[in-house]
Image 1 (spheres, rainbow, N blue to C red):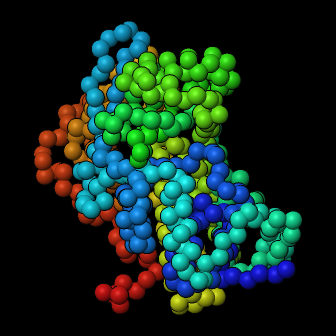
Image 2 (tube, one colour; image 1 turned 120 degrees about the horizontal axis):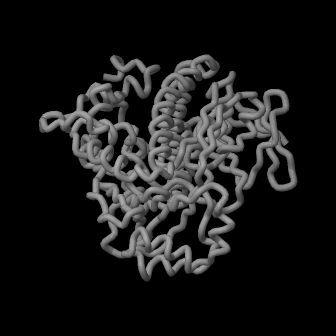
Image 3 (cartoon, rainbow, N blue to C red; image 1 turned 90 degrees about the vertical axis):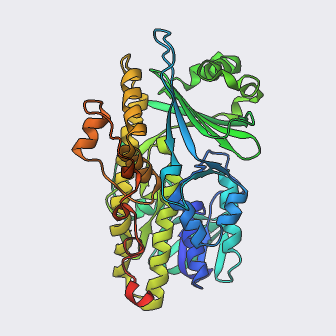
Length: 440
């Protein structure tokens, strides 16, 4: 059997659905093939950054997303001095509210809920087709071979997009290399009921671990707990009671809540990996999301990078079909826009991972000092929040680094809180192929 589409998206996660939604709204025939039947039980990202919220508004789904999510204004950083039993160090706070309105907050939303919103919006378009389960096998000439049930189907398209995730078979067929970094730590993640007053994000750290708490709707909380690599089986053997104690030692306020985890099956092991491919595009094939890059989950950026990839790629393909459907060389603009931005986030996330995962006795006070400078110096704070928000890039200067280490004092000028608009991504930078003068 031979099926045809303008664009075939292999992988029906949030990144693949974002690019498909863009194409469907443009009236372009797009088929999404998703190999997982039903909803996967593996943890996926749930922290939606401001740039992603902006993208959702452009796609007409922001109100629906907000209605099913939980707003995050601050992430509080708590350092516990577990080594010598000294009092905990002062709480620092990273605030999204210092960012320019209206996208001056983040959002927690269950991953499957978000995926369903994107899918339902795309299904409103007659040019959208969704095949589930369907597994990409490889290319046969210029066609994609997909297994649908027991049948092998050929799908012919003008463009092929891989949104398959880390184990992208399309990437393998493209022969695109990737440089991969592995870490000396893993994570345990689980969702359980939370106290009603736990409404903002928290990261509780010691010299050898940290516990991240990110509130979800319906009085639930997503938690992420750092463990040394190779200790997962040992922790399971200790039993659930010992697991509860690990949480309560860091945050006693979870007493009565964490104990509602009644099975190890609800606790998932996350293995962080960091890589970036050499090429996003080859011919009429493009990679997005984890097929192209994998970021350490420290800042919750993986899902957001995939959605932001999908936004740029979808907008570009819509323009290409309007101007020159066969102009495949224009596809490379997607990589030119996205690759430097992704590289910047990968670097920031990697540095954060090192700061929170290296077990050094002197690290607690050092890290606390750095975070105190970062969250209380108005320029450093703004730069940090802008960079993780996805709304722009504002790189640190040598002066910033000196201030961050505490060698120089924090700046006090209140006017420094006003962000330099040159550091926000403009429409021209997001979509450089457009004739913006004509649009204006």
